[in-house]
Image 1 (cartoon, rainbow, N blue to C red):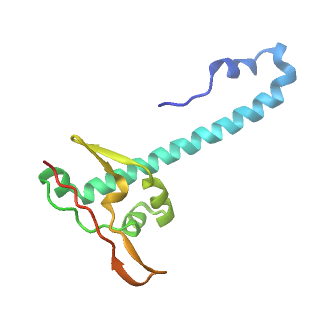
Image 2 (image 1 turned 90 degrees about the vertical axis):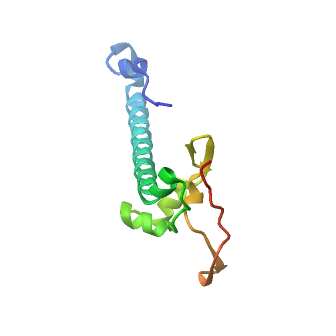
Image 3 (image 1 turned 180 degrees about the horizontal axis):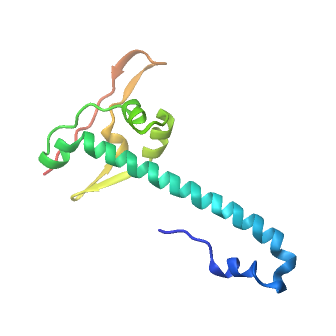
Length: 130
């Protein structure tokens, strides 16, 4: 859904009858614009991330091949952001592909182990078209 500022409130800043509320309206409008900016940045990050995943996993999407090993750190380097940004971006996000709803997180290899030592690949679930 698209989010925007209500024109009615924007118009109130131009009318003298709401002069007492102008400071409140300016502050609220500024905060709302910051939220809108943040949402826009989040959307851009998610778009870039999904594009990178699709590029890297093209064989899966086009031919139904197995997923290639992919880590969040690889995508973070490509997008010039932190691994935690990638992790937050994929959390609770899904891609609708054909009739399947795929968790975005499932496109990344997972590691389990004791604080990063003795890393063992966690079991992965391969999605196949069909």
